Image 1 (tube, rainbow, N blue to C red):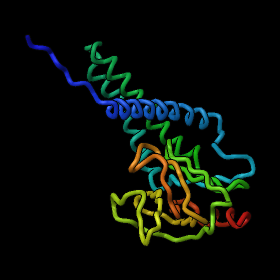
Image 2: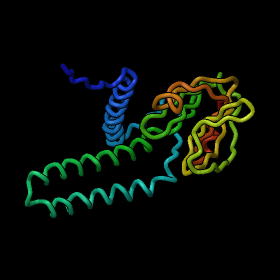
Image 3: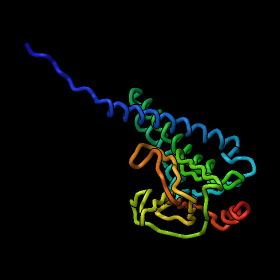
Length: 218
C-alpha cells in the first residue's frame, strides 16, 4: 500500500514567506501614506527639525518612468479594448503600477533626512528610517566618496563597520558614531534587520545646508 507523501515548506520557509508578505503589505501602505502626505503638503519632519532631500540623482529617472507609465495605460487600453477579459486586468495593473511609482517618488520627497534637537534621522525611500541621537554621534563631516557598483551597504575595515546609503554609488556626508550602535535596516539578516555599525555615510542634495544645521547642535 503506497502513501501519497507531499513535501511541505519547512518552518523557516514559511517564516520567510510570512515576513515577505508583511513587508510587501507595509510597503504598499507606505505608498498611499506618502501620496497622502504629498497631497496634504506634510513632509515627515519633526517640530523644530529641518529636512534635507536626497532625491536629486534619481529624480529624472523616476519622473521619466512615471510619464512613460502614464502614456502606456491608454496605449495598451486601445490595443486590448476589444477583449474585456484582458482589458480589465491590464488596466488595473497599469493604474496600480503608475500609483506605485508616484508613491515611491512621494516617499523620496516627503521622507527627507532631518536634523533637529533630537538628533539626525537618516532615511532612504520607503523603508529605511534610522534615528541617531546626538548622544550617539561623535562627529559629522563632508566627505565625498564614490564606491564600486553593487558594493554592499555594510562594509568593514579594521574592525569597524560602515553603513552606506548611496545615491548612484555616492555619499557626501559621514556620521561617525561614539560607539558601535545598533540600527535597523529593511529585510532580514545578513543584509537587513538589526545591524551594529560604527559610522553611517549618506547622500544629501545640499551638504552645505546640512552641515550648517548640524553645527547648531554639535
